[in-house]
Image (cartoon, rainbow, N blue to C red; front, side):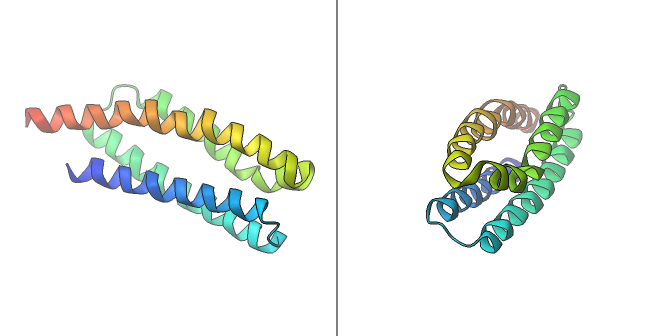
Length: 127
């Protein structure tokens, strides 16, 4: 289904942006460049979540409120990336970021978003 394919493409782009951020910090790129990547992560994540939530509404996903709450939490964390980078410094930021990235972002994609995809696919199989 096109909607699920689009979600998966957006997930790949988001993971690519997050990997680019991690690489920029590891390679000691300028603060200006790191901030630019963080702004790109925040912007893309916001538009991705909006698209995903539209798909959930359109498909009648039953756990939409819980899923939206996950999105709100992830966006709050994304908005704090610059603050965490400034406060922790490069080395500690990378440690925190790796943990956050895998336990929150990747887990959200693999479990919560997979449930949305499965629901959409089940709905399209019926129709």
